Length: 162
Length: 162
Image (cartoon, rainbow over all chains, first blue to last red; front, side, top):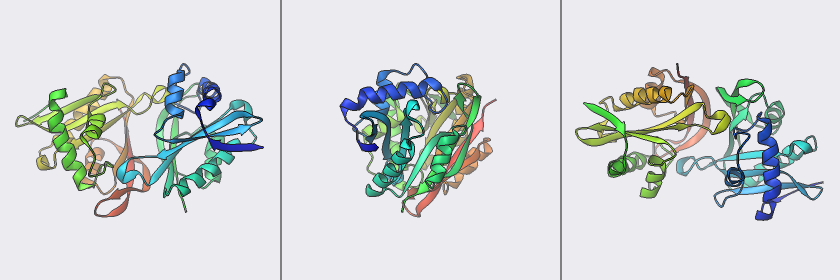
């Protein structure tokens, strides 16, 4: 059973634990392995965007944030970021958060959602977003320094909301 | 005669004047027409990136900034933004700043340069970047609310540095 709700300050230890586990692998996010608590806080908790957590077995198992991808004349397109605890894979947490995020974005009146940097070798993420209606609209060549694979492409993915 | 040099605080009034003129048109940058001095300062002058100004006839006629497009595992790709005073077009200021910026990025050790949001209808900019070796690597559909044309595409443009 997964519950998704707005994040609060008390969730930060759980968010920080997941952040550390995700960036330690170096296969999906640009943060270096030695990124700090303050990096994690700045990225995940702010008054400038909305953050949600997925709770499984009473603990934070994933989180996402939603915000405009640009100000002003680009603010009708949303942007979102997701992390799932590497120890909680294969429970549908990413997919549940994805659907929740699309609904939230529709409710907020956005016309589209864009992911600016999906690592091309992160096949589970690319497939999930394609399942959820996103298309690859850009390929950023050799833009991610994968810890194991070296320089690999990243994708820009997009879908309209309706 | 165009001189390009590092920006300093005394250049801000010139930068602000150009910023206002550019965003008033609503055809190239996402800032709304009522963007403030502080928006302009935050965007153009910061210790987090390098800013350069193009001086023509003793006044600021354009500016660009250069920074990593991402932190950590994406920091080998640079990002840059440019504005030219709409009253100083056709003097080659954009092209001169473009070459200067590419040299500066090479000197700083970047492996590539990426523009995240070039408005597709901004033909002079698209052509200039293509002349300077950039390719369109992504098309962001209906991502810019053009003041005259409504929703239009934006491009992601990229080139490797060598």
